[in-house]
Amino acid sequence: MVREHLKGKHIVITGASGGIGAEIAKLSAASGANLVLLARSIEKLEQLQSELQQKHHVKVVIFQLDVSDTEKVQEVFQRIFAEMGSVDILVNNAGFGVFREAHAATMDEIKGMFEVNVVGLMACTSMVLPKMRERRFGHIINIASQAGKIATPKSSVYSATKHAVLGYTNSLRLELADYNVQVTSVNPGPIATNFFNIADEKGTYVKNVQRFMLKPDYVAEKVVNSMLTKTREINLPRWMNMGSVVYVLFPRLFERIGKKAFNQK
Ligand code: NJP
Image 1 (cartoon, rainbow, N blue to C red):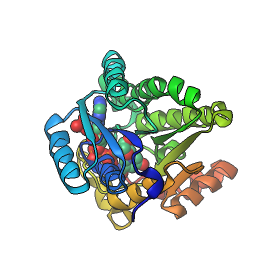
Image 2: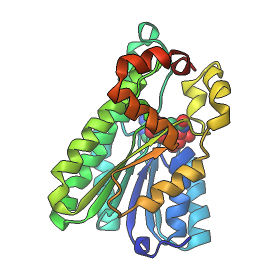
Image 3: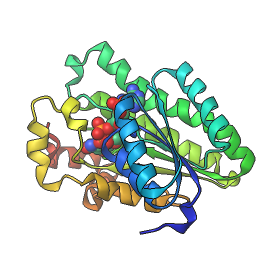
């Protein structure tokens, strides 16, 4: 599917070296967008860059970036503006989780998740906001999670980071409402990516949720279809989001009845 309105647009994607970030990059390039791909694994970015340039004849710029290094974020975004002139869409996708009970999580894990999932996302967003507000044009897409709506056992820290992302995203949307800058949160359930190599050491969760795992290209398609539209949230799968709506209404009952469903990790 060619999305004409994305042709020639400048899209920055963090965490583009694999998983849904790489799939978002592929679909964006297929729609004629010029890309900036960011991640720590430079070889994977180089490979994706050459694949997309050859296949779609679009401009693909890559930078090695650990989003938790906020000084480097500033440096890289200055280089992005020098190279591309402007950023139309920022997809804040870089993130990771470690499934562990709160008492067992180390300070390194706690800080690491917050520094990447929350502070890194805010750092990248801060870099594009002034110009988007000035141009009165742009779209910020934050990959959050259903974990940002319902916190389950063994994901206290990860859930806390995604709750933070949703809080930030909702405020941002209101702040930018008069500036024609769109803000979308993406809240998927489990997706079949390398995410679980780190998150789910023992493989228990993957085994338990295998039957309803989302495919990364499916999630990416929903994200790319939302670009430069007024989509507030993308919630996948829909039935899981219904759970979070009921949870808000009847938290005590939901926690009692849903106890078994919550304990999948
Ligand atoms: O995971 P994965 P996903 N600085 O591991 C990058 C959320 N999510 O695609 O740096 C910069 O395949 C990493 O690149 P590299 C999840 O929380 C997932 O599933 O080279 N980049 C890679 O490209 C996350 O926000 C599920 O290692 C960093 C990418 O991030 C987003 O979806 C469910 C980085 C991760 O690719 C993408 O995750 C859900 C850093 N410090 C939300 N650290 C799910 N999979 O089930 C990592 O609700 N990256």
